[in-house]
Image 1: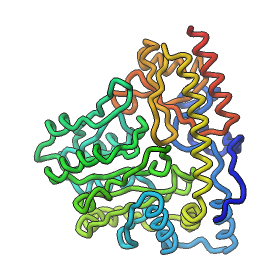
Image 2 (image 1 turned 45 degrees about the vertical axis):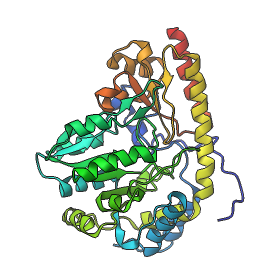
Image 3 (image 1 turned 180 degrees about the horizontal axis):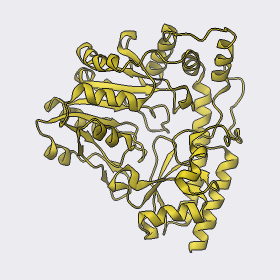
Image 4 (image 1 turned 90 degrees about the vertical axis):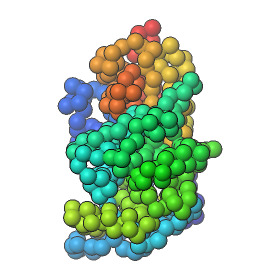
Length: 396
């Protein structure tokens, strides 16, 4: 696709009364509809026109029956991942999935038994530990280590000290949600070394891999070495990148045949099928036409993040913004406000009129933090900043 125009994100379609989760559940979760919802990780930014146009074209055919994911759609993903992330894999390595969380649940069942331990590195996206517990496995919590500058890294010594013969699987969030890290090669290689030594399979949730800010570079876990390929299940897709969660389509890439067959046994038992006809064409168009849209989106997200960073720097006594390397999810260190988690959440709802994710929901390490989704239009970001500034000024 030739770049003809620059994509702008100054405004976006209104989502009230559209069954949008982040709006529909405001009253239930926050007790009021009078909040800007900045919690669930989809964007208040229009899904790209080239995706919607592909759907409109498909709708010209009047039959919506069972369909296989077309080979061309998977090939579009293969080409994208090779070009953007130097991640090479083949058609036979790919399986359709409706969500990363569903894929994670399959991996937990396929590579562990009831009562076995699964490594989770908190603070992390809550389904990581919920999925383990729902499967009647035990969470082995290897908390991330926060450094003096506020950034995070793996605690390898803690990991080594906790692993035993019942530890079968590691759930890796890469890039990390909510702390925004893009793991460096050396960090990932330490994880790989431990997992190889203890015969641990790695489920790599890499759904945010396209939303990385320069100069950071995402390294797919499977690309670390030939040994890494043998133990890695990679979960990737278009949902976060192009605001397509509603299409319910992602993929699982498993390059080792034995690993793939073991995963597929549970996958087939749960009958994942092949998804929606409309999702197939949307998925393919996103990968074929999305490069320049994504480039402009990331520029827009950086501007939004910088606005938030400037505000936090003015009120650093109360809020410190964790430096972000990827995702559109800001991790706010609000411990300076000296509020218990319940009252911290109430501050954002009642005083700032913002609906955020409470940090404590990502694990006990998130106590005193809040997660803010800044993937919104320029107009809405200005309003969000103003609301938060007013609330912080009143507190001052």
